[in-house]
Length: 414
Image (cartoon, rainbow, N blue to C red):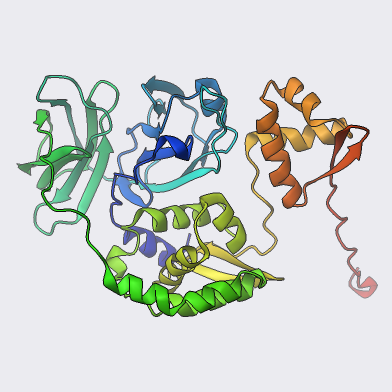
């Protein structure tokens, strides 16, 4: 990544840890992650945590988890939260992308409707350091999982490191020596607690109190209502337009909405999801982002408009599609489609056994038929598979990529 790209990453702020509430009718989903989208200075020893909205088939969720760059680790579960631990920790100063693919199943057999993406930057290498450890509990004495422990430089308030409590309520963080820090402990449903003037190794035992209910309700945003009404005609007219033109029209409408300062650009859950999807798959197009995150045209265009304006991402037109890349990452227009592990196995199986039915595939992969049907449909839309009617059923075939064009050779140069 170039210096400009790292500067963009370094400017990210902590995203809100709380995600929108999920009702029983919404089905299985990922409701929070630790680290969050865009977190920086993450301590390499921190476990990666993914919390689901309902009990999961643990083997399925673990199989669909991926980390890039890959780091071998092991899984631990606490209720509906999956923890991934890497012995010895992650590499320092590295941007990691994590994902749970759509093949992950709940205990009821329901697949995750769309992949969940999040990216984070680990803390840089320091020459001389010391380590802080400790445990966080609630007022009842029970240990607390997933509490954010953040260290900021006392002199200027900038972040120096962040980590998260594990299933034992424990945390560890390595910081640069010869500096003084303020520790901040926070978590959804608990009051924030701070420890001032920390400058040496030590063990900290912290007890958090639950937050009191807020007496005020939601805020009615009249400006957003007016803006939404003003662009309603554009919304209706754009549904039948090609991808690149649809994004262009919605970008015009997005520019009419309120401006957001660069320091707050990623301090929003949906925008963090959009940025995370682009980081994990550079070159992803507008339609695919919208399908994966299941958000409205206007909402996606609004967030992309802000990310483009503040130079967190770049846009390139490829055919009829508007494709997006993280700032500072080399633009590869020919980047292939990113597949989940299950989708990769489906394509490989159909290349070796063309014409298999979805029922056969489900039996051979030991997956529910509806999970296979969902992934076959996605692959079919991406042009990776084709499905043909065969009697009362159907047969699936892998679509082979076209051969690479032949290059002319200058015989005089040989």
